[in-house]
Length: 324
Image (tube, rainbow, N blue to C red; front, side):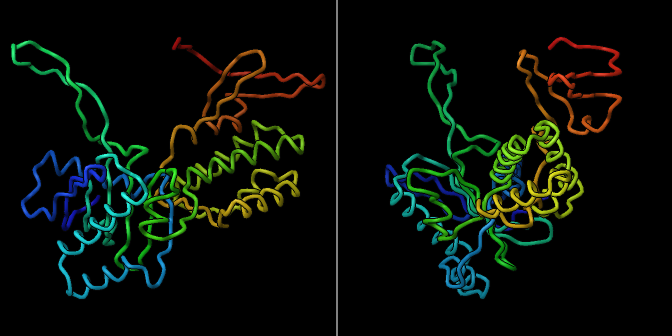
């Protein structure tokens, strides 16, 4: 559960040269508090967040030092960050209007500096015009979920552990590279995508059962995420390619070339449906989706490779079928 200690809110539109706002001193309303709590909390558990390390002389580290030593207030700290971020967005040609939040928050017994730059969604609402007729007019609103165009970071006030959430733009990564000046490691989503591509490629290269290899990768990863246990690339490779050791070695080499560290970042990762389910499609057009653990439960699912090269798929012990 997140607890907001102090918070500043800004209306930002770098295209219109607009930056208005500051520290919120009044108590947040219940609906406003729930909205902010929900969205800020997602920053700590989003699978696409990246971990980074600030330079020793990073400008934001110096600002935090001044704040923690009482040499500047939170209002001054947030104003400095907001202005610098606004200038950075203009330099990087990011001109879309947004709602910026800068907060000091407690999460899992640690205190963090949090920044969230929220993009707007477009929609319509029904209003009465001058003639008292109901008409539809365009409007903008903020989503309760994190959008692809939402930027944010969490920075621990203790050990300065940094996690960044952002989408790459034409100018690269605005928040991490230009604003924070760090080179973050790949996010869990990016790592999972790379692992899946390489498991598929290596299993085909060494004539393994691709479906079995991909399912095994998901099984092992899912188990460690649920138990919040550490998982190394080499251990995962041994589990997937137990019968083909040289494939495991090549997998580890490819991960290293992709810049993926030995220990996979599973902390705070959520088990998505895509990780818990395996989807397959046959050359005859049949599609199946099943829980990854079914691959090891022969009384529920069996995939058999026949001598003539054909594949037999058997779904067992089914008492009811739903049309969907």
